[in-house]
Length: 172
Figure 1 (cartoon, rainbow, N blue to C red):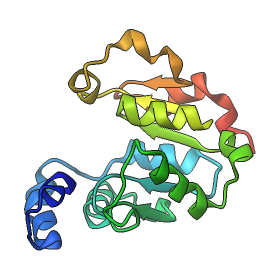
Figure 2 (figure 1 turned 90 degrees about the vertical axis):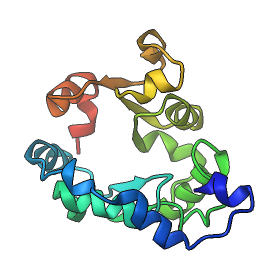
Figure 3 (figure 1 turned 30 degrees about the horizontal axis):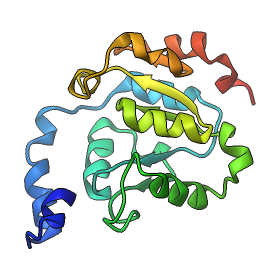
């Protein structure tokens, strides 16, 4: 959408978003394993930081049954359709929202399926968790390059795998 707007196309942004999300209920269902994982994390502040519109992300979270686990969804409205990940300004806006100073960035644990976006978070000082998906191949990256991140998770037993790789997340 941002690319279309940048090229000068005029359209109703919310209608575009509704069109793009059509049929999401065919692909997403309540996910008990994800609920268990989110409940197991002792951190009270959890947010979604996305390049998608907030309404799109909330619809997916609703379908997964996990909306209530998140304090906020920070997407294109929050970013004013001006910046997006992996731009530093987008991350700075989120850090300001979280009231996290540059010296405290290590307290943020950032989950992402985009290599370039997660690398930007790593460079800022976040703890980083890469979630494997087809995005890795789409970005022209290989699994061998993922060792720069703190944890790498494949689909499936995410909670157990993360507890092995980053057990400190479960320390209060």
